[in-house]
Image (cartoon, rainbow, N blue to C red):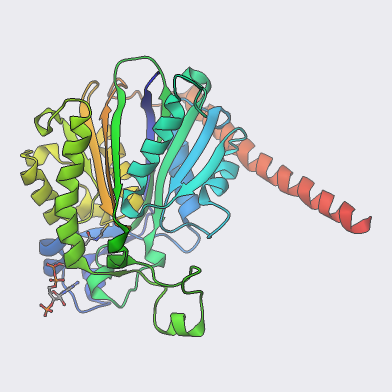
Length: 381
Ligand code: COA
């Protein structure tokens, strides 16, 4: 069984910056309160014409370019998100169309802020396959899986609720996985859930439980609600436990970790978790001050930035760990197998991807046009 390796990565955050001082103009809060209680200084907010899928596509192109993989090589696209463009079709299908990934299966995965870790685990299994049957993703350079975490949390944030609106931001991160026999790759994953805590972090209305109505809108039930203190207590227990469990699968211990890439929720949570694992602060990646909590996007954005900043070297043990709505938690251990620093794309590669992007747009338009022609033909019959 050839393990799944991370062969490309890319992230995207919107241009618009919302600072703590900006928030202090909107609700009764202060830069001092937000920074000392959360570690957040600013976050990115999507423009009106940006969506979860559009940010996911930007991150995906960057990851594909870094990997040197073309969209037609993709067998699988998973988008982990709590803020899909629509209940259906899946955001992953919108991404598949925008990339022109004509051979890929595509689906969304909902596991709150742990979504990316869940998606990585599911994709790795599909990449690796089993001895008895091949995986969904073709082995070696012929196939690949794209795993994305993307969120537009600004659209479900109640901007009049100071207990939540200071925490969240928008963005997307993506990785490309391929199977090969080289040393390293994804060593293991642990995933967990406890639905009895579902009400601690919830978007109450808009689903079949509470369909949209005048009442749900008037009562602001289409915005996320959170019991922050209880989530905090859960997080500081769940994160170290998940890390220890995933390392134990490979006979490793926290002291072996070169870089921990945790879900970026609150700097105090990261510090408590680091202490519980006896990890020095420089081994725990944090970009929380710049982006806040971007839910399923936070781990892949952090992973991409850590790799691009040269904080991850070949053969390093990298552990991603998350927790979130569900309640859910999970961790994945990766022995980084790509030589770093990654070479900047050559002119030829940049040109190739510009052509691929143009082709993807044209392909989508052509398919819509042909479908429109057929539907007209059917009407006339
Ligand atoms: N600005 C100023 N004051 C605020 C505030 C804000 N933005 N938000 C809350 N407060 C006030 C509260 O009203 C409360 O006032 P009171 O004592 O007069 O009642 C006080 O600050 C303390 O509130 P509390 O909720 O106890 O603060 P806290 O130290 O627990 O910090 C969180 C709140 C949300 C930052 C923290 O609980 C947290 O990070 N929880 C985890 C959240 C999380 O990770 N969610 C994502 C999961 S994926």
